[in-house]
Length: 323
Image (cartoon, rainbow, N blue to C red; front, side, top):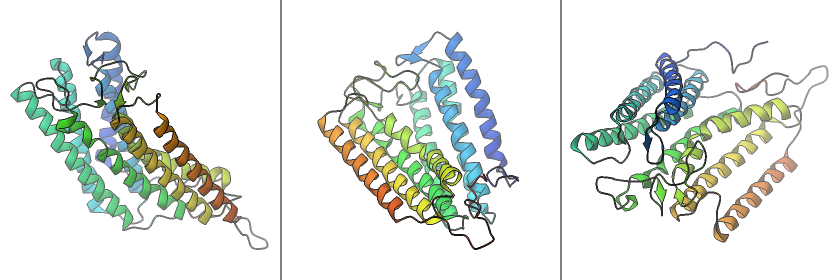
């Protein structure tokens, strides 16, 4: 038996082509990190295209898969996905081009050309945001088999939008450091390029707005994976309604965590050095989420079966994997 997750479907070809190109770019960037000794804002100059290309691989592949879940073909969603590809190409072309020129792509207004490229990136991101929203509306308008699966996909899309929105403070004039020609920053309270966590580079001395941005964007993968795991490992013990409620709780907690991480960053705190207020807010979120999960589980029901029949866990959901 094949799974619906891996079934043959109308995969969006432009997205798949884009994902393939980004996978190649990720490999090239990884090589560049090793062989190119240039440093930009405290990290290897090829680290930014590496991180962005890997992120686009995950994002593009997830969107392409989500489009296959629609029972009816949506040309509007497909066109919006093509726009996403086009804007991704614009953004990555500028990022790689600026690496080749040996200068920064983000917040760079040190010359007329750099300023134009930065503004073009900003416009591309706004268009991508709108296209992502259109895809979300198209998904809402069509049924997805299985309530848990539907909630996971819809919340994933919505929280990815939130992840894009929490990046806006990076581009605000008040966030810009006192450096001529620099129009924004991802660090708060310290200059960009200071000490950071391995690979991701998140500041260890001040706040970093990239953390909430990263967490919010990847709800697109985390929540569907959660729905899949609930189906695979709890499908015999929890009915579809209970699993759907657990996904809703997880989505609410995930959104609150994204906002909490952004709030912490805006107050200039490193991720691993929270103050008492941040710890209290985190404890409240954990307690609330735990209480909600226990409440859902206590009210949950086992899947029912009729005499002489067997229940296939999550047989109604396109995110299900048979035992």
